[in-house]
Image (cartoon, rainbow, N blue to C red; front, side, top):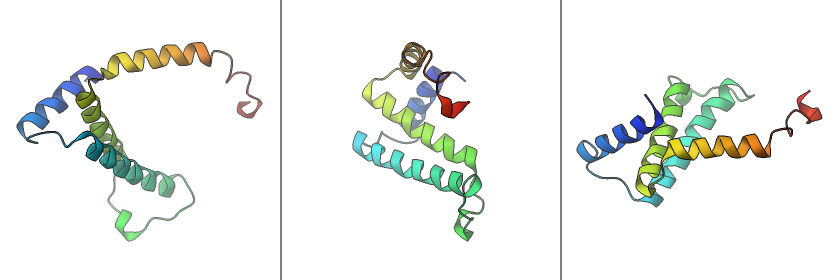
Length: 108
């Protein structure tokens, strides 16, 4: 599935099953919640924190998909074409960071 298709499928689902989008600020709050849930799993799986009973059964991929879902919603609501935005972002990084990381002593 392309990013554009994901945006379209998200919009279709919201308009048919979800009834309507939550407002943008509500979705921003939801995005922060979902990002926190993703962070919780990451710090337990890859960091130094141990898993709690309430963390068991949480799936890293599912938490990432939750973050992406809300980001797709926000893009749709604000008229952002994420495919084009990502293309421009790569272009910016390729220009700005062309030598930066290769010259970073910390990465060698």
